[in-house]
Image (cartoon, rainbow, N blue to C red; front, side):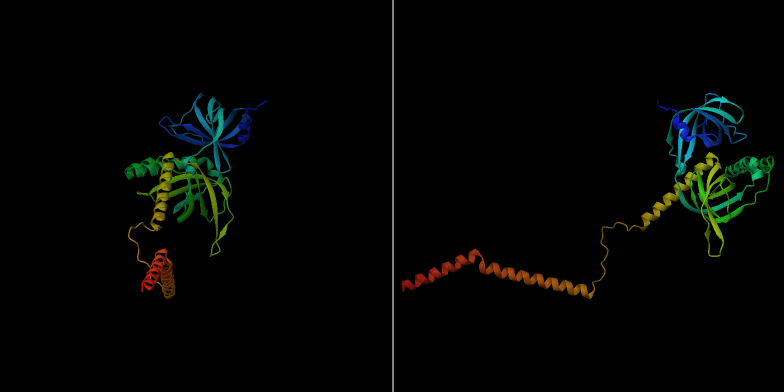
Length: 332
């Protein structure tokens, strides 16, 4: 008997962390993390990570969403429907369809060098991380949209931060960036699941600042610099990132990729119908060419002599001359 639910059990299990994608009424998808508290056949009970969802995000019984899981470096997604709301953050979801590889543009990665600020978040402050992130990213969006400084200050005064962030500033950070996360070289050793506040200073035109909260996924062995200090290549995944800012990251990746292709094209020799002047010949090359020329002339002379002496026409002429001489001798 075919077990039609075996695929779900292969990808999902109690305690697993999944991504839930909730379609927005104005287009796009809002993505959040959740933990599976129960799993039975094609049903999941999932607790959403956020205490409060943004105002434009809503879901109710009957809403269609997608459920995604990470399998090594790939993301697999299947469809789901909300069948019951068990609380503000707990949903019962019925899965449908098969898990398929999700090709998302944020998985395209590129190496970049740019300014990055980071702040390692203390465990005790995790519950306040999202609120502070919301304030910072809205402040940045208002600033870019040209709001008056007084208006911005009055708006921000309504939401004082839980704590003053102690930013570590890397003016020229080497990182591998995608729309889903980044790998950043930092002088601090952190642990998996550690979360960090990040400021990404994208060198666009005009420059933009992206505020995000990232979760550590892996840490590579340290690299020792010449001064004896250590650097850790730390892979992180964006936990909190506004979709408008994700689009800015995509734009930065595209700009960097186009610049990379332009540099490759500039290194290629341009096509020119006029031949470039050749380098002068060396003495050895000149002597070799003279020798080959003399040999060719000698062969040409020998062939000419051969065909002039032994061609059929010359043989006929010789026979004719002998006959004339014989005839004249008899006539005498």
